[in-house]
Length: 131
Image 1: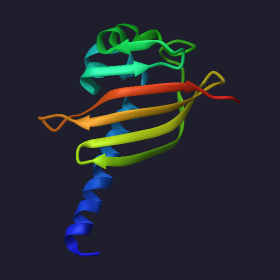
Image 2 (image 1 turned 90 degrees about the vertical axis):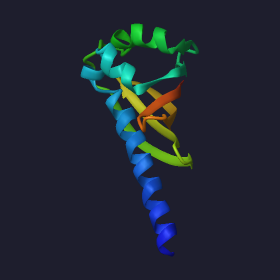
Image 3 (image 1 turned 180 degrees about the vertical axis):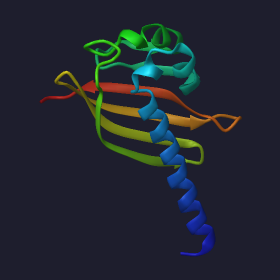
Image 4 (image 1 turned 60 degrees about the horizontal axis):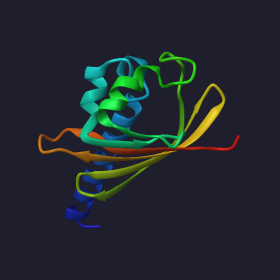
């Protein structure tokens, strides 16, 4: 591999790592309960299809996020098998599984870098998973 390919590979890994860090931040109680902190991670065009099948836009998500976790906003969210793929420069697809109070879900999220270099999620989907 030449130095340009190595540099591109490193940049791709860094972009995936930044998206992963953002996604994991959204699982922390102090972020979920703060409209300001959560809002900084949600793209203005954010859309979610929740594991309930409900479609959420950014404003609805920010209003409900503090109370969405089963067991309350302080409930521990177990995250495992997080994988990220750089789809194109500034666009990362993440997949992983969560468990909260015995309820499992498979997750998919798209993160993109905005014009100011900030990483924000603009699409998220949760699908109930069997035990």
